[in-house]
Length: 507
Image (cartoon, rainbow, N blue to C red; front, top):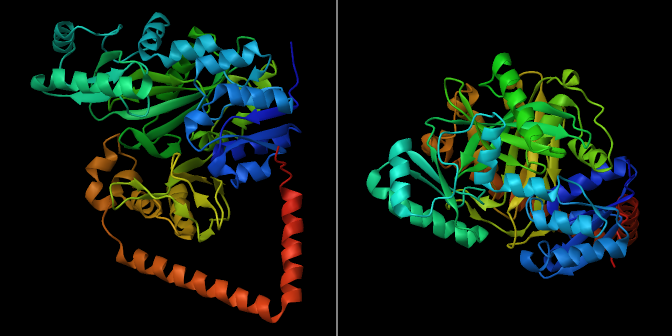
């Protein structure tokens, strides 16, 4: 049964909220924004058709407040809630609450989120479904004597991982027998602190692994397809930094095998919606299931760019009950796409977040360039949330051309007022190991000296940009004082332009 959606509440903030709202607008669907105290002037609030305040800056009192978000959905008469990624996107209880309240949750069922969100249960499910998994344990390990025995059976080195984990939390690599118990206790403590669950399991450590994920789509009629792979091996502390597709490691034969495994993994849990099956791949092209993300991924735009499919629209249509119009034989990749995550962080100070006021921003443009962001001049990046400013995506016919296009786009990207990771990303594009496509998940640590080398010319240019922006501001201010009518005319013209673009209302 198809139930058309007419209004979507986006239970998120920043660039992903804006990204979802754009697809809603193209589908003729109204969007509802929610915002905390510090996000009152955020771009997603200004873009939405309606906007509602939901609480203080702290996530627990705003973007993680299920009661408040559901209350706003009812008040605004939203048919559905899109959770974006992060916050409540993989919260089975939130999905369940939406169903109970008669609100469509744009994502999988609570049962699937629970099954795949628990890494131990996910491993058991994949083994039962015939999907290759990394050798290791199938159950929670509590007794230290048992864990010592298991680690010796699996063989060092091993990874101790939190069952409820993600983002590298509750994870420890152990390569010495004397470190097993201390690493175990540290992993369990961090898991309890981060997820309220200290369950852990052990996996064999794969040396020189490649982190490759497959995008899948499944509808409510049992149809499942994959939209090929993304290479996500450029990571820092288990957090992705740069992604690309196709993967330089991939062969047509390996893509077909891994794609089929990804589809089988989704079918094993009767998955519907957009999701991602993540694999570890060794240098001999052996691959193993790592985990499933039951939501939209940060890096989804590169898949959209090489396949031509809008994944957010697909999520909404699946949630309405529509059958997939795409068949596996319809899917093919055209060209090459790369995504860089732009963060407000100080790469020279151990990547510390760098919140603050954006005094100037020039985003890159031109052929094959897409920027998914949410900041603007005069916007103050809050300290309370993830410091990602935007995602910069480029497309070109070949990988080498895509790298050069990304280099050009990063050169054009100018932000002052806060520290950013742009220079660090430029170094990645220049690094021989990245350019020749032979990198693995150790890429950043193996090339740290090259990637973090200071660039005095860049620093001088940024200083000049700040001075230039300051002089330009004062020139405009002086011109407004000399010719106030002209200034007033331009101000009202800008006001009218923005009124046409942003029709948000505050309630």
